[in-house]
Length: 209
Image (cartoon, rainbow, N blue to C red; front, side, top):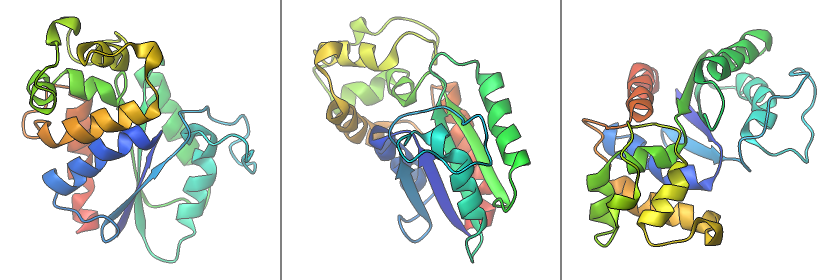
């Protein structure tokens, strides 16, 4: 069974690819594909309707993509990783499950996981990984809060790396993820939502291999 992974944007790809390859020994294009979108978006009011092509966010496209994957000739497992941002995690996951239940021709294997607050939260929770990727990083600029706190993760990471958040663009986030992800501790993750993602992937691995 093949794994199709849906993420919000290109900045999420390096971390997810690192996890699948380093932690689970999966091979890109052989065992999995990662599909980045143009942001988070929002679930359409009518989940059975054809999606608006102008809305390219993950949630905008999710119902249609689940239906499409369900019609593939071969079996696949769909993994959906979405940022919590300011949403209530329990409510967001409930909405995602509700969408899955209501659509037809759906894939038999689906895993919904939420990054709290965003995938950059995985990085700032792992100070050693940040420091190994960026030896000159000023970790004092990252607030001393419990992992996965809603503190503006990417903004604080930018400041720790000597950047002004207002000057950063998507390419910066991709660079940070590319450099930090190889050093993430995937055996004893500091971020609870990263740990939940790892446990979820582990639970479906028997379907993939």
